[in-house]
Length: 309
Image (cartoon, rainbow, N blue to C red; front, side, top):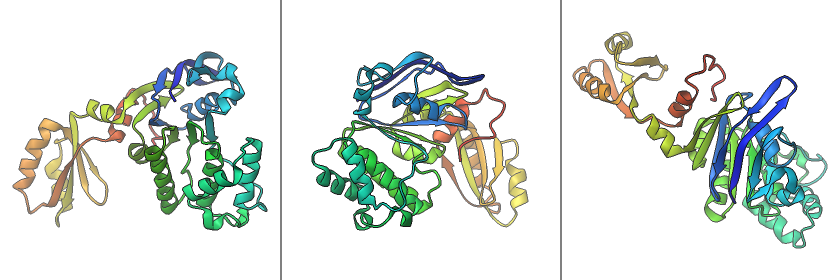
């Protein structure tokens, strides 16, 4: 189900949360929304699910205007906010039963069993939520959203605060939804690698404005003129650092020495390194990824301190 966002504006007092972004989320895609803190991601999601109204502009889900369609949009969109909680004494199954009754689902038992299986909680379904880990609680939240099988899922920072195992489990669920259903999934995240792994397309917001949008492959190609040469130093790290000065933007990460440079310059650098095996144990050339596209999209900004991790 396609989502269309057209010149949306939203202000809270003196704070401009959204300043006219316009873009389209293709039907059936997994779409990422990136941005630094205060970029407008959560505000956009609240408007998208009808929890607030834009001051100007229009958001459509499957051709319905979110501002005027009311419950018809909420029937189409499942929303998982960044922070959500459940009564601690209830079991996971009881939580889902309440959500199923609110939605008026006739086949509640079947839907609950299906969603518990999908998110990997069938064995914990009859345990009190108070005993759930953070990752289990997040997966229960996703199960509650999936009960009505909505054609659109909106997930705001779904893996924030999870440990690596919890993140990996959540990623597998999203990948299964993408593979086995026709749902349109919209995800916001600070984690560039997460968006790069899960999403087909992306929008980059900054200060409420749209800075870039398109497929991840397209954004990579826009930065394809640059590559990063990653060197593993031999014994004399200082000598290697001196040898690569002037070859590009040099960064000592602790594990390796990275030189970001134009593709043409990389050929000369690699040739020079090949002749200095006394300085280098090994090296590789990395193509630009989403991180490079993100930095380029925000290149006009002077303060990039809150870059996603």
